[in-house]
Length: 289
Figure 1: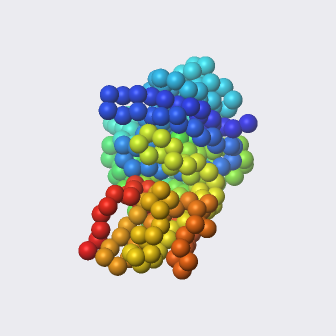
Figure 2: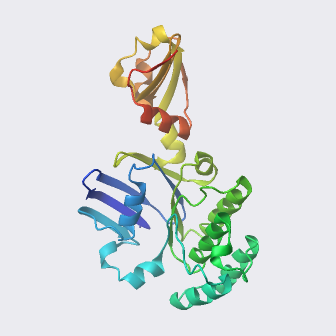
Figure 3: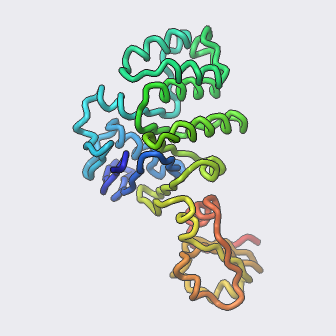
């Protein structure tokens, strides 16, 4: 049974809409949620946590519709960390931990203390006195201490130095090791996805482009490199995105179309970043002179 299942999710605003969003996540895996700013990642995440009321569609958490959870049940089952969260700013970390532990029946003080130590967090400091990186680490410490089966994080490693990011990614991997927990996290840092994500879900303009295992996600596409002359022989209908200059041509196509290419065109397996850049570029006629 999926730990998270999003089916035909729609949400409309005056200037933006989520359109038929579908993806699922099994227990014991990490899913990276990617897309440009404004693509719909945060709206989707808020819909999953019932902070945004969907127009239609179904969202299941642990096999149960999200709207059938009470607020307390939802908070016990799913940990959510959005960017810019600012809790009990004038309180010391030690006090915040004591207060939060009383709200969660499965709060694990051993895990909490272990993460405080790992992240070198000073319990005597007030939350507002922490650097942005330390605030992120403390919020993660709280989120991972009450045995939530699903951890949902919006840009958790944004603005952190490489060492701090590596520390956090290591903790993520340990969190899902028992096969009972999963993580959904949005990010613009593609190297983080390449390091720990099992699945990639890519959203563009409110619609899911592709959601699949990381290796299959990349293998769905091919990146081609050739002369501009050879590039002009390729049907535009095959192209998902392109970049060209006076002499060279680069484009993204689906793997299934590879056999239709002219002889001699170089074909390589693209990275996640190359896929995203090419699809966002599209096939508009812009040349690099």
